[in-house]
Every structure is written in structure tokens, then in C-alpha cells.
Length: 216
Image (cartoon, rainbow, N blue to C red):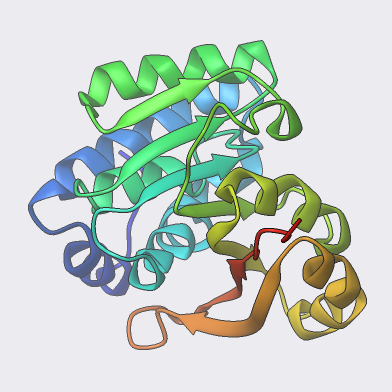
């Protein structure tokens, strides 16, 4: 079992509720086969709950009920699988180009019995038109100037990007402002999720997209 502090357990219970057992099994997958196959660094194992799983799961508060969420560059399922466990009302499409990661993700999805998850092996730019998402999530994929072009097109003109970012979030927004506007972003803001649950809350960039069709 991966160690969990009392504070982390309390946060996990609030976020995952009666699905806490699934979250614990997911963390075990990360700590074992996830590290063995290079999806998670061995040094991250003691911090899986705080730095990774809870850090990702708290963004569920920024996602509307019943949304179809596309997780770009899903990797080890962060945040995609965290959201699928915390929110069975969501439909998740995990977009990941690397085969070894896709195989691992599918194994975990099957083991946890997550009926609300589809794993798709492709690049984000190639998934446009194949996915009709209300929300697109991403974590540690790329700077916002590039990430905007990978995420916004998956919304088919309307929806939200919810990207986990660090302390440079406001600076990234400034640098990406023109790109975001060009792609149909009408409002960009920084949110802080999990303030009441986590010692280090999660910083999120939210981009609201409403691309008006061109009038001939």
C-alpha cells in the first residue's frame, strides 16, 4: 500500500466518496506497473496522493455535471482517470499517442471497471472531428501558447479548456492571448481548486470557447 497521511485521506474521502477504493487501487497501479513501465518516476511514489492524484482530482469542481471530457496527453491518467473515478457522471476520452501508455491505461480502466472511459491512441490534433468534447483537460503537456492549439479545436467551437498549470499561469495566459482569441477563446481566467482540501491547492487555467460561425 502507498502511504497516505491523515490529511490526504480526509481529502480523498471528500473527493472520491464511496469510490475511494477505486482511487486506492489506481494509486497502487501507479506505484507498481506505472513505475515499472516508466509512466511515473520512482521518486514520485511517496507523493502520488498529494502531488498527483489529489492535485488532479480537485479540478472536478470546475467541470459541469454530465460533461464529455477529453483528456489530452493522458499519460498515466492524470487527470483523466482521477476525474473518471471521482465523477462517474462524466464521460472521459483519454487521448494518448504512445502505445505503451495506451496499453497501460486500458489495463487500469479494465481492472477498475470504469465504464465511463474510452482510451484513444492518437495525437490531439488528429482527434479533431473524432471527439465531441464539452471540456478538454491537460496537465504537463506544453506551454499554453502551444496547448491552446491542441485543446481548443477538440471543442468543435464551444466549451471549456481546463488546464492544470503552475505559478506561471497568468504569465502563460498573457503570452497566449492572441492565439486563444484566434481559436475562439472568449474568456480566460486562473482558478484555484482544492483550497479547503489540499495543503497546496491546484492552479487551473480555464478558457471559455465560443467560436462564432463565419457569415458568408
